[in-house]
Image (cartoon, rainbow, N blue to C red; front, side, top):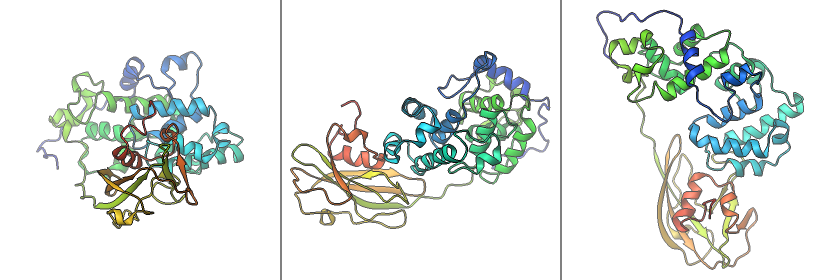
Length: 368
């Protein structure tokens, strides 16, 4: 908990929106899904499809990681109608590596609803957007503000950091979320709410960073209570993290004489639903699976290839990896042999790519 001061630190109470927007006009990030202030002055408006797609991709993922995926998706599916007309398996393959795969499944569901029930047009308000599959309160507010210029308070992790420092909010996250959202609602620009939302995000990403914030460059430094108190890096206050459990399991990489790898599809529901995997034991978030070669899906000369670790949101997983070469069996029902030149394009989640890489270094690289 940050130290309390006997005398409150009175920050400047001048409206922050004009200062923030003036800074954003000069220093905004150029992002492939964004319409910049200069483009807006030239008459270019934000495409709700691109705003929606970027917001779904950016959930729990970094901007730099999202950029190539966004460019690939919009090149293949330039409109929501095109995405709705695509196959779910193709979307899952294109999404592989971004993680949180329920987002990809909901991406398809949402596109289908927008195309079939809304004539290919996204609702232009928060409540209408919130009714769509895979769109929660934050995403609805972001799309409403950025794509339709609705005065909605948009609060992501960057905004939480900026506002908790501006207001020196001592309530730990996540309990502080309503307090932060109320503060953003008081601050936002009703004339340029979309730019205000993106400006707050940019400020948090480039100036008001988690460590060593560049306070001297901040357009809001004169109104920042945490800076006035000399402790901006203590905010936002976060509740103590609980240790995540460690689960164990085994993965079996079977290779045929042509170098094809045996894959199968996971059930549509649940963790990594609908994704491809090599055969594994019955591990889950709540229980361990078998970890030795006796649990292999069929007899073969299985060789131990090491262990890989992957951290999910609520647990970590150690997979002992085994490899067998020269396997000539026919693929079982629901499985297939993936050729070497197609393996990198399969809908493999990161944990499965790591398992295959442990057994076959370089096998899942797209540049091979």
